Image 1 (cartoon, rainbow, N blue to C red):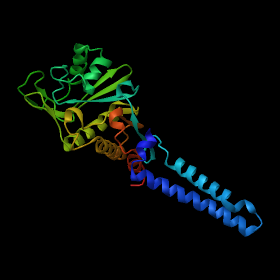
Image 2 (image 1 turned 180 degrees about the vertical axis):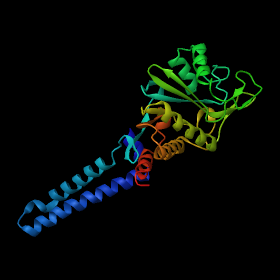
Image 3 (image 1 turned 90 degrees about the vertical axis):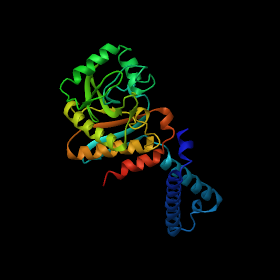
Image 4 (image 1 turned 120 degrees about the vertical axis):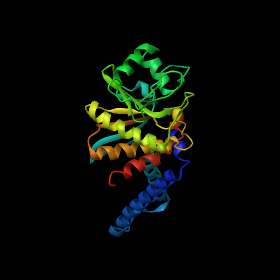
Amino acid sequence: MSLLQDMTTWRFWRHFLTGFFFCLGAVSTVQQIGTSISKDILIFSGYPFLALTLTIAFLGSLYWSWPRPIEQTYSTPNIKISVIKGDILTEATHLVIGTNDTFDMETPIIISNGSLQGQALAILYGNDINRLKADIDSALIAKPIVGTIAKAGNVNQYGIGAIATVNHAARLLFFLAYCEMNSNNEASSSPDKIWKSLGCLWSEVSRRSNGGTISVPVIGGGQARLSNLLPAQDAIRFTILSFILASRQSRVCEELRIIVRPDDYKKLDRLELQAFLSSLRSS
């Protein structure tokens, strides 16, 4: 299925044709060397050899273009980045869960049950809203309140980039505020705000995670309402670039995993993402 999807992209055919002609040239070189040694070597002539040559070229180029995991390791800094299809709440790593600057948690009145935040309440906390609120309030005790807003639910604003770091089952949950709530409890964000929140996230991860692997969702869709301005493909590159730049300044963690929902994953140009990751090795 992944191969069929990749076959609809020009990048796949460019890789395929490059590999095909490379293999064709390699076999042709072997043929010329063989015939230069002895013209009596019949194995290098006729339709059987032509069919063998084309078969080798086809199989070699198919192997060259076959879908592989989207991941890249770097030596400077020493990190690994992976883009994985799945459910972030099944990951055994530290997790990033996007939220709003007032850290409202109530579902379904304020927060949608279908959002990652709503699913985290259901799956990680067994819908125990009081326990989640207690954990969040405890994590926010030392955080400065930057304003207030007249609305239902929480009224204290902690600002874009505020993070409530919660200990949960031998790992950390980073509740990252990258959206602002208005008086109608409608969340919104912008690329600038997401970039700022990611910078704050990497600083917190560096300080609290002890180098452990961190899993993040695709930040920019959902409650941020940026799916048209910042679709999944661009949001992933946005997160990767932010992480790379932060890691070059100081160590953040050993591995970043970007977990993509299956419906979004099948829409990605995976070869383009891999090329983007590879391009950052020498930049």
